[in-house]
Image 1 (cartoon, rainbow, N blue to C red):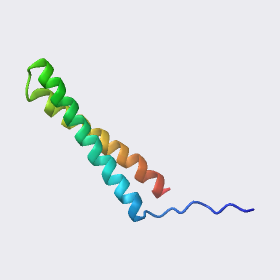
Image 2 (image 1 turned 135 degrees about the vertical axis):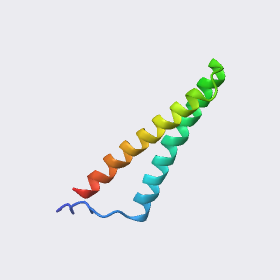
Image 3 (image 1 turned 135 degrees about the horizontal axis):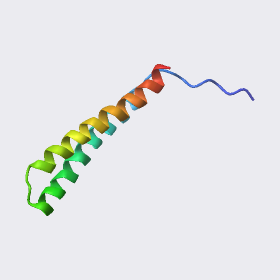
Image 4 (image 1 turned 90 degrees about the vertical axis):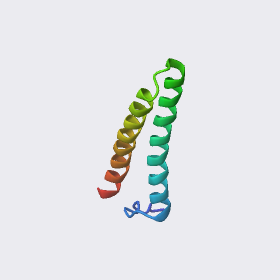
Amino acid sequence: MPVAPPDPTLRGRDLVGLGGMLAGAVILGMVLGLLVDKAAGTEPVFTLVGLALGIIAGIVAFWVRVRSFLR
């Protein structure tokens, strides 16, 4: 039986997944930063570092996923 080629278009569920992935990366980075800050008593240094790393990780993951759709 022939296999249909993958559909290269972004659908609603794909966009929701991308948004969730981006939000999850930012929230996870911030929460980890908050936990490190609480343990080390260095508020808000690691919260901001975790937030920045979460944003960067989210952008990179977002780009990798979108790039696969653009090919």
